[in-house]
Length: 282
Image (cartoon, rainbow, N blue to C red; front, side, top):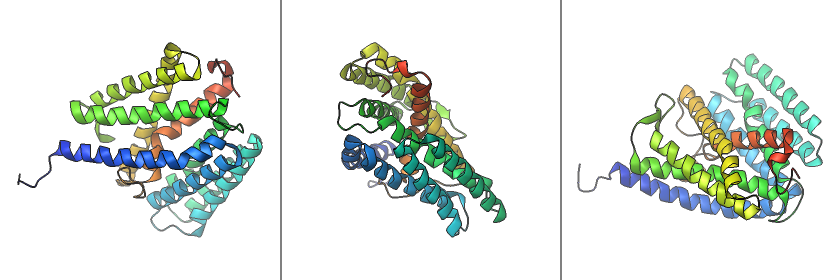
């Protein structure tokens, strides 16, 4: 090693710093639409969905045409529109029909079948975010609390896992899917995010212990979501979905953990509203 060579640990901590700065900038950009909710938040979610679709098509298609982008983009915009109106029967009909058309187009062009599943993968979490946030404005609204809880827990799990894995290292967690993940990172993320969930529970009003309990399934879903996208990228021999976010890669790389957590949280609260005790289902 030369005098100017960088140690792996130093490189990872430098990467952590870049990730942190990017995260702060993203937090600032997301703050206004998340605060106001409603159409402003739906518009913001639409932009995120369009970027994710663009990354998905580029990642899964070898020679994407206009329809490869157009079908999922149109489906996303229509689904978000109906979600904002609260007409979720049309949301799911749009996702279903759009996915069928996308799959048929994929088969016609002899592309990877997985490409046609991009509508479900990218749009469904966006719809979940809109449903969780709701129409109410402000930091004290039920929708803001729900969305903030999920996002805080997922971000904490990702951050503590990265930090713990960088420091403690040790046995690999899923070497065939994501070689950099370790068991020390997993447990660091789980413990750290659980504590954040407990603190969030105190702030929201249902207490530290219940916050710990609520955080657990969100953390597990975030890990599964992360591994799922890693498995897809490994299958496609792709390192990052894009390069728009310094230290993170693409938008899909940044929100992969959040996507499954949002869907899980929405399903659980819809089926079992009292799981959100102090504020209700909104």
